[in-house]
Image (cartoon, rainbow, N blue to C red):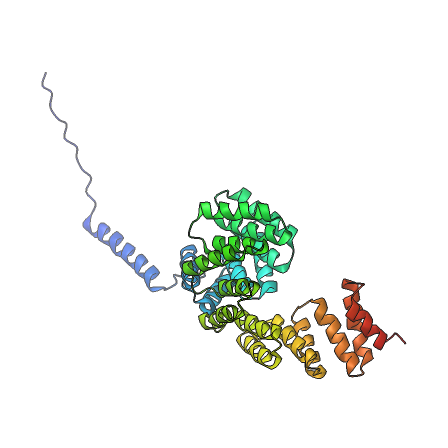
Length: 371
């Protein structure tokens, strides 16, 4: 038997038909590429792509790393507006604003980040930091512990936990958390800064200074690192060294109000009240909504017995969200000293709601007793 190959007859498409198909395909893709809308079809509305948002977030992070803080604030804020569901942008903007003294707004953004993604270790850790700076230490510890539970290798979570533990007075646990943060990331300026803070709370100022210097070496354009270092110098009696660091903070970022405020407070402690007021004015020039500088200027005017000026400053601070008992009773006393008991009493009573034994508030109500 002869075994051979069977020939298959191929079906041939007419050339004209193939040409029509090719030209139709070309026309279709040309229409898509040029943006012309075909009859009966609508083009999808352009929205931020995931890749575009990621690129913008990476750019904002780079600005932060380079110490270009005003630009970083703008970049993060633009992302939150472009993509309101981006937890990372909300959290990182919240952290940056907290570092720049806008703790109330920073906390709101951190809370929003956790609302968007409660399973984000980064968002929980930054919420812990913001809560701690707001004075809610127990809630801060809880948030940081949740961050660590979500990601046991999160160095930032341990670093923020160290600060919260220190503020709560649990210094042994604070040091353990700080050391763990450095074990996980030996280049974390947050970890060095917060270990220094733990040392400072224990009265170990030389060790604190060493850690603050290490943090500055890692990130030389972060204002609050210089404020921490200046505070430690002041604690050991080196007032000139403290002044140098506070001035350096204002030079590192002239748009950050916290440097001017710290420098003003240093002059206030030395009873150089007019010089202090000049620094507080620079602080509010840098950020017109930085409440602390108005309140601190109020302290200076109060000591100088310029009560009308003190009233203006205290009221501005309070209108921006400041809740210091000292602002309340000194505002009340300022009104009392200008014979305006009607406006004095509400502030004195508000101070007593916080501390019923407040001596200055009780003194004020003796000047302005209830009718």
